[in-house]
Amino acid sequence: MTWKRITAIVVGLLVVGLIGWSVFFAGRRNTAVTVTTAKAARQNITATVATTGTIIPTQQANLSGSGVVTAVNVQVGDTVNQGQVLATYNRTTNLTATQAGTVTAVNIQAGQTDNSAAAGKAAITIANLSDLRVQLSLTKSESAQVKKGQRAKLTYLNQTDTGQVASVAPTATTTTSATGASTPTRAAQVTFTKQPTNLVPGFDIDVTITVDSAKNALTIPQEAITYDRNNHPLVFRVVKGKARQTSITTGLQSNTRIAVSEGLAAGDVIILSPSTSLKNGSAVTAK
Image 1 (spheres, rainbow, N blue to C red):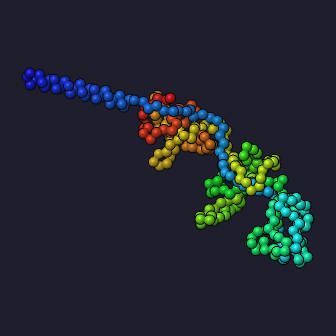
Image 2: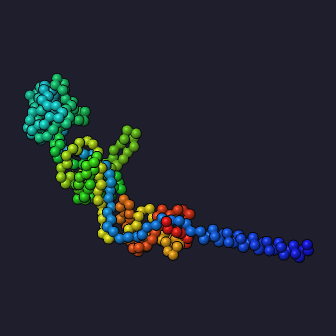
């Protein structure tokens, strides 16, 4: 076999190899990524703050006396009337009910000195258990959204009631935990539209407050959104089988969807939960 023939064979093999590799890599480049999609759609959207509160009586009297207690006339659970004598002291003084209600705490005993005030607690506590509300401790982000008069949904076990924000404290207060951590919160209270039954003061209750809403807003599922290196929101639209990176401006956010004010139109097909490997211009196929 001549060198000329050998050279021709080698060149032919190289050409075939190059063509094969080109076809292989072209196929890899053109392989479409399978994605899950949804459409941008117009609908009403509601933004809420979900938190947990404590059921409390609207009216509660914390009563204390002074001196040696000679008699205690009530016990926890008793129903009393306004003006009723609850306890007597050796100084011929009486501890009387300043309101009608139920006795929820008794911290004095006959024959002992009433030191309840010095201990920072009431001798006897009376509460109106037929008129309840919910006490909230709002975080900084929650506080920025919650306003007096906003509607609320209150859920206790399998019971759901409605209400509204009755008050929001003008300032925050800081509490210190047993571990020494300081947490500033802002107090707020929610009243019931109709007084519920079967609620127990002192227990927690789930509260969902409607803080904003919009009608006929352009919305997309939250899982469609990703962010660029400057933390600006963007999505990938599907245009003629290609992923097209699109910057957007967002607005109200519900539990599942978010409003888009710029960057999309109703009917645009967008990719849900885009992978980090997805690039602008990638070939895609919807499931």
